[in-house]
Amino acid sequence: GRTGTMFACEQEAVRPDLMCLAKGITGGYLPLAATLTTQTVYDAFLGTGDIYKTFYHGHTYTGNALGCAAAVASLDLFEQNRILESLPEKIDLIASAFERFAKLPYVGDARQCGLMCGIELVQDKATRQPFDYRRKVGASVCAAMRPKGAMLRPLGDVVVLMPPPAMDVPTLKRLLEIIEETLENDMNDLK
Image 1 (cartoon, rainbow, N blue to C red):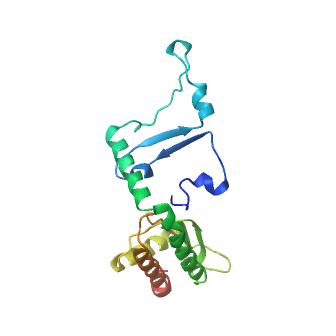
Image 2 (cartoon, rainbow, N blue to C red):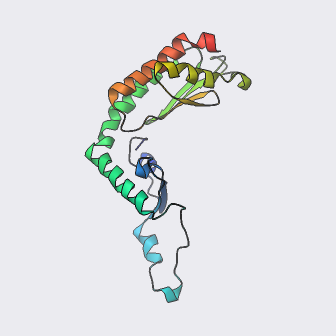
Image 3 (cartoon, helix red, strand yellow):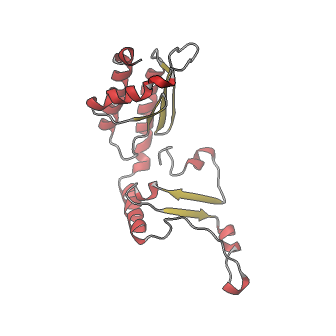
């Protein structure tokens, strides 16, 4: 759901023959994985044991009863709380904030796909020259957000933002405010 649709492949109108799922299916509470397939592929492996039509596969966490129960409960909550229907407002809120972030002097790129986002911090906006990696500017920016109430992590000098789809709008607004405050007010001290 983080891309705005249940599965990312829907964004590109792709209908895969096989799809592997993990993590999010239980809401992140327990490990579980699943392999989904089309009816055509499924039917190709149907038969009695004597004709050796077996699809030899397996995820480490396939079929765990506790994981399956967590997945059913998580998917029920996902539907009951209409999480997918709530995403466009949140995605638009992030897009609006990211337009502002992109104009800041140390932001080389502010990119987003649904709720999956990255803010690339650079030393020189015009040339997109990166900071010296040893300075760990991304880590410093994320550390500066913690006392304000936001716990984000960097990948190098890219600040990663991946809010849970169930995050409410006021909390998301506050998170975006903290990011903006830090990028506007603290970057000179952190760079």
